[in-house]
Image 1 (cartoon, one colour):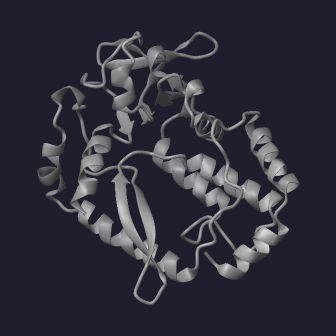
Image 2 (cartoon, one colour; image 1 turned 180 degrees about the vertical axis):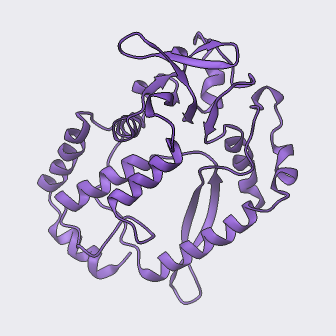
Length: 271
């Protein structure tokens, strides 16, 4: 979007550099991403950055309303998907914008949807670093909206997902994670946070507590779940042998409570 930088990047692009980028991504965790990698990032001008941040702040103000649950609860139309112990606000928040032009021809964001569900947070840092190494991105460009660096970004995610809990008691939960398109992000998350990436079928239930078995065969209690399971997919997998239900009253903390995915999927139409 910054014309001069776009022209410079295009002129210096080569297939060799692009293949080096793909190899870089593969080598970081010995895993090839299961989706196509774009040849270029966006180069966002300061005006659009400012407008995106302003839009995010305005939307967040609405989502922090004390009556949010009152206006959003009817969106949860199917009782079988109501998970107990919902927190006051979503832990994670994604906002998808389309970019239009204002009356002066300047870029202007318009909201497409919001999601109360974690995205590929760790892959974002993977690919931004790979672009920096392989594609000669100017040094003053950054993938962070705030004044952060790689270490601070990872630490923030660690504080949110793991916190003061021992990492072995925190699991990233998904349906057959190795088969998911976004597995590269889950693998990166597992390595960087030191938490297991666990298939939902590997979870054991005893009373209100959940457990899994580590590589040594020891039974480990699950105290926090970094949830990546989407109910739409789970509902289609009648072949899965599950030992617990999301709707059980469990002694576990959801890092990203499942209910917020459904609520924000429907709330997106209110804006």
